[in-house]
Image (tube, rainbow, N blue to C red; front, side, top):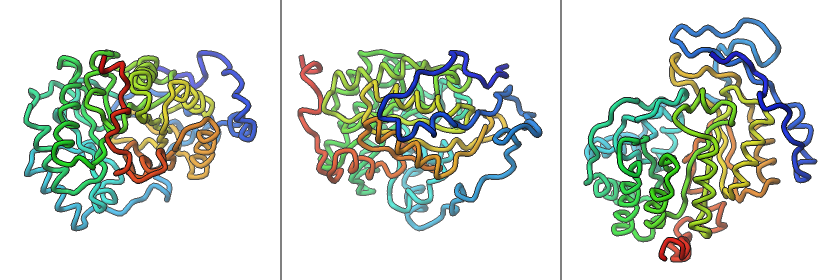
Length: 358
Protein backbone atom coordinates (compact mmCIF):
# COMPACT_ATOMS: atom_id res chain seq x y z
CA UNK A 1 0.00 0.00 0.00
CA UNK A 2 1.30 3.44 -0.94
CA UNK A 3 0.61 6.05 1.69
CA UNK A 4 2.95 8.94 0.95
CA UNK A 5 1.85 11.95 -1.07
CA UNK A 6 5.37 13.31 -1.41
CA UNK A 7 7.52 13.17 -4.51
CA UNK A 8 10.04 10.33 -4.00
CA UNK A 9 12.36 11.85 -6.58
CA UNK A 10 12.93 15.02 -4.59
CA UNK A 11 12.42 18.60 -5.85
CA UNK A 12 11.62 18.90 -9.52
CA UNK A 13 13.82 21.05 -11.75
CA UNK A 14 12.94 24.70 -12.30
CA UNK A 15 10.63 25.16 -15.28
CA UNK A 16 11.94 26.65 -18.48
CA UNK A 17 11.81 30.36 -19.27
CA UNK A 18 8.60 29.91 -21.25
CA UNK A 19 6.85 29.23 -17.94
CA UNK A 20 7.74 32.51 -16.25
CA UNK A 21 4.28 33.88 -16.84
CA UNK A 22 2.87 30.87 -15.03
CA UNK A 23 5.50 30.37 -12.35
CA UNK A 24 2.92 31.00 -9.64
CA UNK A 25 0.82 28.16 -10.99
CA UNK A 26 3.58 25.61 -10.83
CA UNK A 27 4.74 26.79 -7.43
CA UNK A 28 1.34 26.78 -5.73
CA UNK A 29 0.31 23.46 -7.22
CA UNK A 30 -2.53 21.65 -5.43
CA UNK A 31 -1.37 18.87 -3.18
CA UNK A 32 -2.42 15.35 -4.02
CA UNK A 33 -4.55 13.41 -1.58
CA UNK A 34 -2.81 10.44 0.07
CA UNK A 35 -2.98 7.29 -2.02
CA UNK A 36 -4.93 4.47 -0.44
CA UNK A 37 -5.23 0.74 -0.90
CA UNK A 38 -7.71 -0.13 -3.61
CA UNK A 39 -10.38 -2.21 -1.92
CA UNK A 40 -14.13 -2.55 -2.23
CA UNK A 41 -14.55 -1.07 1.23
CA UNK A 42 -12.44 2.06 0.66
CA UNK A 43 -13.41 4.96 2.93
CA UNK A 44 -12.34 8.52 2.12
CA UNK A 45 -10.04 10.09 4.74
CA UNK A 46 -11.80 12.36 7.18
CA UNK A 47 -10.79 15.99 7.72
CA UNK A 48 -7.34 17.15 6.76
CA UNK A 49 -6.25 20.23 4.83
CA UNK A 50 -8.17 21.64 1.92
CA UNK A 51 -8.05 19.27 -1.03
CA UNK A 52 -7.88 16.20 1.26
CA UNK A 53 -11.49 16.17 2.44
CA UNK A 54 -13.87 13.44 1.31
CA UNK A 55 -15.28 13.98 -2.17
CA UNK A 56 -19.00 13.65 -1.57
CA UNK A 57 -20.48 14.72 -4.88
CA UNK A 58 -19.41 15.71 -8.34
CA UNK A 59 -19.12 19.44 -8.93
CA UNK A 60 -21.69 21.08 -11.17
CA UNK A 61 -19.34 21.37 -14.14
CA UNK A 62 -19.22 17.56 -14.45
CA UNK A 63 -22.96 17.11 -14.84
CA UNK A 64 -24.06 16.01 -18.30
CA UNK A 65 -27.37 15.25 -19.98
CA UNK A 66 -28.30 11.57 -20.06
CA UNK A 67 -27.93 10.09 -23.58
CA UNK A 68 -30.95 9.09 -25.59
CA UNK A 69 -31.38 11.20 -28.74
CA UNK A 70 -32.19 9.86 -32.18
CA UNK A 71 -28.61 9.51 -33.41
CA UNK A 72 -27.59 7.89 -30.13
CA UNK A 73 -30.23 5.19 -30.57
CA UNK A 74 -29.29 4.63 -34.22
CA UNK A 75 -25.56 4.35 -33.53
CA UNK A 76 -26.12 1.95 -30.66
CA UNK A 77 -28.26 -0.24 -32.92
CA UNK A 78 -25.63 -0.09 -35.66
CA UNK A 79 -22.86 -1.19 -33.27
CA UNK A 80 -24.94 -4.19 -32.18
CA UNK A 81 -25.88 -5.06 -35.78
CA UNK A 82 -22.24 -5.12 -36.91
CA UNK A 83 -20.88 -6.70 -33.73
CA UNK A 84 -18.63 -3.74 -32.93
CA UNK A 85 -17.52 -2.15 -29.68
CA UNK A 86 -16.93 1.50 -28.80
CA UNK A 87 -14.75 2.85 -26.02
CA UNK A 88 -17.59 5.32 -25.47
CA UNK A 89 -19.66 2.48 -23.99
CA UNK A 90 -17.00 0.21 -22.53
CA UNK A 91 -15.18 3.01 -20.69
CA UNK A 92 -18.46 4.70 -19.65
CA UNK A 93 -17.49 7.99 -21.24
CA UNK A 94 -19.54 10.93 -19.90
CA UNK A 95 -19.62 12.50 -23.38
CA UNK A 96 -21.31 9.58 -25.14
CA UNK A 97 -24.62 11.40 -25.56
CA UNK A 98 -23.07 14.52 -27.04
CA UNK A 99 -20.66 12.69 -29.34
CA UNK A 100 -23.13 10.14 -30.64
CA UNK A 101 -25.69 12.85 -31.36
CA UNK A 102 -22.99 14.42 -33.57
CA UNK A 103 -22.41 11.01 -35.21
CA UNK A 104 -18.94 10.69 -33.69
CA UNK A 105 -17.74 7.50 -32.02
CA UNK A 106 -14.43 5.92 -31.03
CA UNK A 107 -14.30 2.32 -32.17
CA UNK A 108 -12.64 -0.22 -29.90
CA UNK A 109 -11.25 -3.18 -31.81
CA UNK A 110 -10.06 -6.66 -30.83
CA UNK A 111 -12.88 -7.27 -28.36
CA UNK A 112 -14.02 -5.76 -25.09
CA UNK A 113 -11.76 -7.68 -22.67
CA UNK A 114 -8.30 -6.29 -21.87
CA UNK A 115 -5.24 -8.31 -20.89
CA UNK A 116 -4.19 -5.56 -18.47
CA UNK A 117 -5.92 -4.19 -15.40
CA UNK A 118 -5.35 -0.45 -15.00
CA UNK A 119 -6.66 0.87 -11.70
CA UNK A 120 -8.64 3.73 -13.29
CA UNK A 121 -10.20 1.96 -16.28
CA UNK A 122 -13.76 0.63 -16.59
CA UNK A 123 -12.97 -1.80 -19.43
CA UNK A 124 -13.22 -5.45 -18.38
CA UNK A 125 -10.01 -7.43 -17.98
CA UNK A 126 -9.30 -11.13 -18.30
CA UNK A 127 -8.76 -13.57 -21.15
CA UNK A 128 -9.98 -12.09 -24.46
CA UNK A 129 -11.82 -14.01 -27.17
CA UNK A 130 -9.86 -14.96 -30.31
CA UNK A 131 -9.31 -12.09 -32.71
CA UNK A 132 -11.86 -11.77 -35.50
CA UNK A 133 -10.00 -11.00 -38.78
CA UNK A 134 -13.21 -9.75 -40.45
CA UNK A 135 -13.69 -7.00 -37.86
CA UNK A 136 -11.85 -4.33 -39.94
CA UNK A 137 -14.32 -4.86 -42.80
CA UNK A 138 -17.30 -4.41 -40.48
CA UNK A 139 -15.70 -1.34 -38.94
CA UNK A 140 -15.23 0.26 -42.36
CA UNK A 141 -18.88 -0.50 -43.10
CA UNK A 142 -19.93 1.32 -39.93
CA UNK A 143 -17.77 4.33 -40.79
CA UNK A 144 -19.32 4.47 -44.27
CA UNK A 145 -22.87 4.20 -42.96
CA UNK A 146 -22.24 6.90 -40.35
CA UNK A 147 -20.66 9.15 -42.99
CA UNK A 148 -17.70 10.05 -40.80
CA UNK A 149 -15.12 12.58 -42.01
CA UNK A 150 -12.77 11.70 -39.12
CA UNK A 151 -12.65 8.39 -37.28
CA UNK A 152 -10.84 7.31 -34.11
CA UNK A 153 -9.85 3.68 -33.56
CA UNK A 154 -8.57 2.33 -30.27
CA UNK A 155 -8.34 -1.10 -28.68
CA UNK A 156 -8.05 -3.08 -25.52
CA UNK A 157 -4.53 -4.23 -24.73
CA UNK A 158 -3.92 -7.58 -26.43
CA UNK A 159 -0.63 -8.78 -24.99
CA UNK A 160 -1.71 -12.29 -26.02
CA UNK A 161 -1.40 -11.47 -29.73
CA UNK A 162 1.78 -11.24 -31.80
CA UNK A 163 2.80 -7.59 -32.11
CA UNK A 164 0.05 -6.68 -29.65
CA UNK A 165 -2.52 -6.55 -32.46
CA UNK A 166 -0.71 -3.94 -34.56
CA UNK A 167 -1.79 -5.75 -37.73
CA UNK A 168 -5.44 -5.31 -36.72
CA UNK A 169 -5.01 -1.53 -36.43
CA UNK A 170 -3.27 -1.41 -39.80
CA UNK A 171 -5.97 -3.45 -41.52
CA UNK A 172 -8.70 -1.18 -40.11
CA UNK A 173 -6.94 1.85 -41.58
CA UNK A 174 -6.56 0.12 -44.96
CA UNK A 175 -10.22 -0.93 -45.08
CA UNK A 176 -11.38 2.59 -44.28
CA UNK A 177 -9.08 3.96 -46.99
CA UNK A 178 -10.73 1.60 -49.51
CA UNK A 179 -14.24 2.67 -48.63
CA UNK A 180 -13.72 6.34 -47.75
CA UNK A 181 -10.44 7.71 -49.09
CA UNK A 182 -11.27 11.25 -47.91
CA UNK A 183 -11.90 10.21 -44.29
CA UNK A 184 -9.03 10.89 -41.92
CA UNK A 185 -8.05 8.22 -39.43
CA UNK A 186 -6.71 8.59 -35.91
CA UNK A 187 -5.38 5.53 -34.09
CA UNK A 188 -5.14 5.42 -30.29
CA UNK A 189 -2.75 2.53 -29.81
CA UNK A 190 -1.49 0.50 -26.84
CA UNK A 191 2.24 0.49 -26.11
CA UNK A 192 2.87 -2.82 -27.95
CA UNK A 193 5.25 -3.58 -25.04
CA UNK A 194 7.67 -1.15 -26.63
CA UNK A 195 8.05 -3.13 -29.88
CA UNK A 196 9.32 -0.89 -32.67
CA UNK A 197 8.48 -3.64 -35.18
CA UNK A 198 4.82 -3.49 -34.10
CA UNK A 199 4.84 0.31 -34.31
CA UNK A 200 6.24 0.11 -37.84
CA UNK A 201 3.45 -2.27 -38.85
CA UNK A 202 0.88 0.28 -37.75
CA UNK A 203 2.65 3.28 -39.27
CA UNK A 204 2.90 1.53 -42.63
CA UNK A 205 -0.89 1.90 -42.93
CA UNK A 206 -0.34 5.67 -42.78
CA UNK A 207 -2.81 6.90 -40.15
CA UNK A 208 -3.26 10.65 -40.08
CA UNK A 209 -2.82 10.89 -36.29
CA UNK A 210 -1.07 8.44 -33.99
CA UNK A 211 -2.13 8.69 -30.36
CA UNK A 212 -0.81 6.92 -27.28
CA UNK A 213 -1.94 8.20 -23.90
CA UNK A 214 0.63 8.74 -21.17
CA UNK A 215 -2.34 8.81 -18.72
CA UNK A 216 -0.56 9.87 -15.50
CA UNK A 217 2.66 11.08 -13.91
CA UNK A 218 5.68 8.83 -13.46
CA UNK A 219 5.24 8.40 -9.70
CA UNK A 220 1.77 6.89 -10.05
CA UNK A 221 2.50 4.50 -12.92
CA UNK A 222 3.02 1.32 -10.91
CA UNK A 223 -0.18 1.97 -8.96
CA UNK A 224 -2.46 3.25 -11.71
CA UNK A 225 -1.05 1.50 -14.76
CA UNK A 226 0.90 -1.56 -13.56
CA UNK A 227 1.17 -3.14 -17.02
CA UNK A 228 2.68 -0.01 -18.55
CA UNK A 229 5.94 1.89 -18.22
CA UNK A 230 6.24 5.67 -18.21
CA UNK A 231 9.52 5.74 -20.14
CA UNK A 232 8.22 3.15 -22.60
CA UNK A 233 5.20 5.30 -23.44
CA UNK A 234 7.40 8.33 -24.07
CA UNK A 235 9.80 6.29 -26.20
CA UNK A 236 6.97 4.93 -28.34
CA UNK A 237 5.81 8.46 -29.11
CA UNK A 238 9.36 9.60 -29.85
CA UNK A 239 9.84 6.61 -32.16
CA UNK A 240 6.62 7.46 -33.99
CA UNK A 241 7.90 10.96 -34.68
CA UNK A 242 11.25 9.58 -35.82
CA UNK A 243 9.64 7.07 -38.18
CA UNK A 244 6.90 9.41 -39.40
CA UNK A 245 8.22 12.96 -38.93
CA UNK A 246 5.40 14.61 -40.89
CA UNK A 247 2.54 12.81 -39.14
CA UNK A 248 0.76 14.19 -36.08
CA UNK A 249 1.25 12.56 -32.69
CA UNK A 250 -1.01 12.97 -29.71
CA UNK A 251 -1.22 11.98 -26.05
CA UNK A 252 -3.43 12.52 -23.02
CA UNK A 253 -3.20 12.82 -19.24
CA UNK A 254 -5.94 12.07 -16.70
CA UNK A 255 -6.01 14.41 -13.70
CA UNK A 256 -7.23 13.72 -10.19
CA UNK A 257 -5.65 10.35 -9.37
CA UNK A 258 -3.20 11.68 -6.78
CA UNK A 259 -0.64 13.60 -8.85
CA UNK A 260 0.65 17.00 -7.83
CA UNK A 261 0.59 20.10 -10.02
CA UNK A 262 4.30 20.10 -10.75
CA UNK A 263 4.10 16.41 -11.71
CA UNK A 264 1.43 17.24 -14.30
CA UNK A 265 3.63 19.97 -15.76
CA UNK A 266 6.63 17.63 -15.78
CA UNK A 267 4.60 15.01 -17.70
CA UNK A 268 3.57 17.70 -20.19
CA UNK A 269 7.21 18.68 -20.64
CA UNK A 270 8.23 15.03 -21.09
CA UNK A 271 5.64 14.59 -23.84
CA UNK A 272 6.87 17.67 -25.65
CA UNK A 273 10.41 16.32 -25.36
CA UNK A 274 9.07 13.33 -27.33
CA UNK A 275 7.80 15.86 -29.91
CA UNK A 276 4.10 15.22 -29.30
CA UNK A 277 1.90 17.70 -31.19
CA UNK A 278 -1.53 17.44 -29.56
CA UNK A 279 -2.31 17.09 -25.84
CA UNK A 280 -5.57 16.31 -24.04
CA UNK A 281 -6.16 16.86 -20.31
CA UNK A 282 -9.30 15.70 -18.52
CA UNK A 283 -10.71 14.91 -15.09
CA UNK A 284 -10.55 11.36 -13.74
CA UNK A 285 -14.01 9.99 -12.94
CA UNK A 286 -13.99 6.86 -10.80
CA UNK A 287 -15.88 4.04 -12.57
CA UNK A 288 -16.67 2.15 -9.35
CA UNK A 289 -15.54 1.77 -5.75
CA UNK A 290 -13.17 -0.94 -6.93
CA UNK A 291 -11.13 1.60 -8.85
CA UNK A 292 -8.57 4.20 -7.84
CA UNK A 293 -10.28 6.85 -5.70
CA UNK A 294 -10.55 10.44 -6.89
CA UNK A 295 -7.95 12.53 -5.09
CA UNK A 296 -9.39 15.87 -6.17
CA UNK A 297 -11.49 17.65 -8.75
CA UNK A 298 -9.72 20.21 -10.90
CA UNK A 299 -11.72 23.35 -11.70
CA UNK A 300 -12.35 24.60 -15.24
CA UNK A 301 -10.03 27.51 -14.41
CA UNK A 302 -7.20 25.15 -13.51
CA UNK A 303 -7.65 23.30 -16.78
CA UNK A 304 -7.40 26.67 -18.51
CA UNK A 305 -4.14 27.38 -16.69
CA UNK A 306 -2.70 24.03 -17.79
CA UNK A 307 -3.80 24.69 -21.37
CA UNK A 308 -1.89 27.98 -21.29
CA UNK A 309 1.20 26.19 -20.01
CA UNK A 310 0.83 23.65 -22.82
CA UNK A 311 0.69 26.38 -25.42
CA UNK A 312 3.83 27.91 -23.94
CA UNK A 313 5.51 24.53 -24.25
CA UNK A 314 4.81 24.50 -27.98
CA UNK A 315 1.94 22.04 -28.46
CA UNK A 316 0.05 22.71 -31.66
CA UNK A 317 -3.21 22.15 -29.79
CA UNK A 318 -4.22 21.53 -26.18
CA UNK A 319 -7.72 20.30 -25.36
CA UNK A 320 -8.19 20.74 -21.61
CA UNK A 321 -11.42 20.69 -19.60
CA UNK A 322 -13.02 18.53 -16.93
CA UNK A 323 -14.95 16.47 -19.49
CA UNK A 324 -12.18 16.22 -22.09
CA UNK A 325 -11.31 12.69 -23.14
CA UNK A 326 -8.68 11.62 -25.63
CA UNK A 327 -11.08 11.51 -28.58
CA UNK A 328 -13.48 14.23 -27.40
CA UNK A 329 -14.12 16.50 -30.40
CA UNK A 330 -11.21 14.72 -32.10
CA UNK A 331 -12.14 16.20 -35.46
CA UNK A 332 -11.77 19.69 -34.02
CA UNK A 333 -8.44 18.77 -32.45
CA UNK A 334 -7.25 17.65 -35.88
CA UNK A 335 -8.41 20.91 -37.46
CA UNK A 336 -6.68 23.00 -34.83
CA UNK A 337 -3.45 21.02 -35.01
CA UNK A 338 -3.01 21.45 -38.75
CA UNK A 339 -4.90 24.69 -39.30
CA UNK A 340 -7.23 23.17 -41.88
CA UNK A 341 -10.29 20.94 -42.17
CA UNK A 342 -9.77 17.25 -41.26
CA UNK A 343 -10.61 16.22 -44.81
CA UNK A 344 -7.69 18.33 -45.96
CA UNK A 345 -5.19 16.56 -43.73
CA UNK A 346 -5.23 13.96 -46.43
CA UNK A 347 -3.30 10.77 -46.80
CA UNK A 348 -0.06 12.48 -47.51
CA UNK A 349 2.62 10.22 -48.92
CA UNK A 350 5.06 12.31 -46.91
CA UNK A 351 3.29 11.42 -43.67
CA UNK A 352 5.50 8.35 -43.32
CA UNK A 353 9.20 8.81 -43.82
CA UNK A 354 11.44 6.88 -46.13
CA UNK A 355 12.67 4.99 -43.09
CA UNK A 356 9.54 2.84 -43.33
CA UNK A 357 9.81 2.36 -47.07
CA UNK A 358 13.45 1.44 -47.12
